[in-house]
Image (cartoon, rainbow, N blue to C red; front, side, top):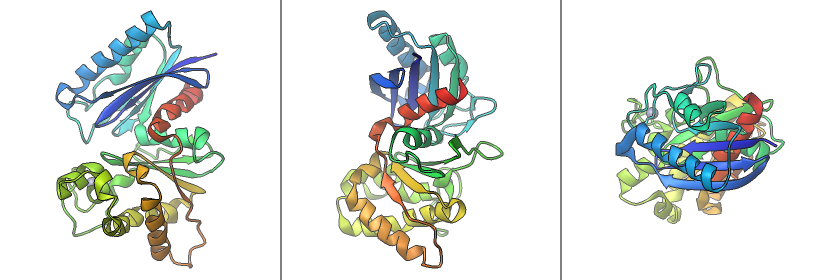
Length: 286
Ligand SMILES: [Zn+2]
């Protein structure tokens, strides 16, 4: 029975998990120290692994990482992090391999989350599946025939930087009115001075919020005709207060001309989509 170390690196927190076979037996989540950069995070991961190894006898045979930013999959390198500096071309896989002394595979966290929901969550037996994470930033991942679709340059599924408001404000990518700029947690808080969680308790706000969000999802539905779209990340925890108005708005924007289904569900694995997806990624590549 394989022992898998799963690592989920996000813009505000990171999690390390231990799987015995298919069973999640250990999880530890800590805040991302943005000023400490990648070096500090690798040290934190090393400390957790050492504790698990010595105190709990958890010695992994393999490790899979979901990284919160673009990853060049063929070369297994971090391209950059949009939200945390110091990550461009940081040799993360080499560093983690040194710590675990076992094979390591890495992909973008939204791609990994997509695998998690596809095999263990709300997207079981749904193919093609599209997964969206509505969190600090916005990411997307497509699973087709059970595999992540990465495109020619590992940049497929980057739904966060689809333009949904051409005259909108400037995004971190340098262009204007991207889905991430209009709908992610980081910008909601900067624009409105209140957390996404708080804003989404206001039905009037939700009605306005779902308009650009549905524009982004419409693009996915038109291009991919997924069997289901699963939405994860902190913002998706708003539940029916968000999903009800979102489905209505999607049905307004996608007319009856299209026979593509609009099957939109919240993630079932909550904060663990990426951790379970890492298990699936390890099963596929290691
Ligand atoms: Zn952008």
